[in-house]
Image 1 (tube, rainbow, N blue to C red):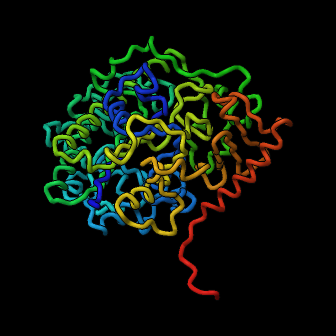
Image 2: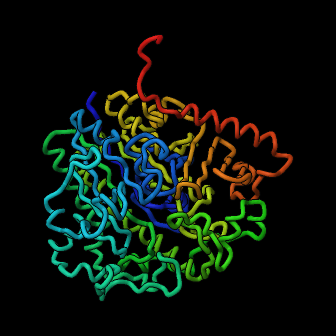
Image 3: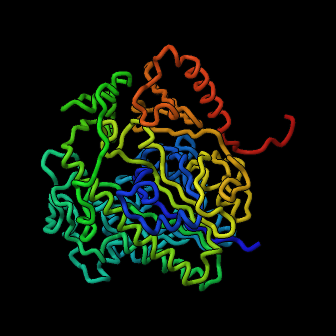
Length: 510
């Protein structure tokens, strides 16, 4: 059987409801088209609600506690075997276009300044990088200052020699066209949500263009390809060029909101987010932990942010359409296995929270997940089979006709994707650790319940996702849920045991 091409398309920090097929407030016609061509899995989870560890799990098939990149600001060890490396050795042309984020903004890293803006270096470097033969990278979200790499070189080639002026400045540098930041607001808030950067020079169409170029080159070489098309949006900051910045009316947006009393049964850090100046100092050792701050934010501003967030999604959906059309034009759509997903979720006011943090609600852990492979994956279907990003490596390796190594923690979902099996796993695990001690929380999710346990203290969360899908009543300390709690803790420990990687096979009795 001819080996399929494999195309992984990801966004960054996308709420599971930010799809037109499940939400009539947002327009994503090309992702809707992909759903019609394949199966949408509504119970997919990230292995970590933080970028670097989740993305590293995608390419290693390991949980963050095993592959080494356990949080952001940590480098994925370059000696860890990766999906791209396995496929490249098997004759695939492998590529990553867009955001990598396998390395920190400091230390021995390709993703730090001044290396990011060393454009001559990037013009001469396209890999190999973490098993990918060919990479074209962008590191920033929206107008963030850590911009450069191949994307900046492309902007220069398109005539935007003053591209630095459109991004937040480095120390001592002016940036005349950069969006104004909202005074006293979180780092991701922007007073200027209408970004002056020309639409055609945004990284979203760059990623679409370069993905199509990679695919065309692979077809010309008559080689199967594995391409990870990695969009940095809709991750904040909330700013985007027109017409996308004005595509949605903030008055039509309905963000989530805090339900009075819902944090009364939760660990203290949940309620602390609703204070003006909460003291999270115990969790900021040595570095700040995302989300450990006040989440108080004006409702009208959140509606404006949500409108831009949706605009960012519709913008990248356009480029997804360009790539799907390119596959059709090349006549290889039927030979290409496509997975669309994201690295983790996002809060848009749900539970009184914004952006992300150590709050393991479905908004943060559950992710959109679409699989398409004409003639192999059932079309127009919706499945409740539990998926995890840690399963992508073994699933893709099996699809390519390769056996997955024994030391992976993910399981192959190929038979589930193709409709030959009802499920491949009955639980998902999510790890979240920002500093050596705290916050450090792990969640275990099965078909009905979710339980979260912290490294320190006696607090935790237990939710019945069937009876309480909005997760408003934490059952951790409820006497009537004691039996369920005990059973879930037992399941959780067994889930860890089932997920232990086998570094090498046993060769003899002794």
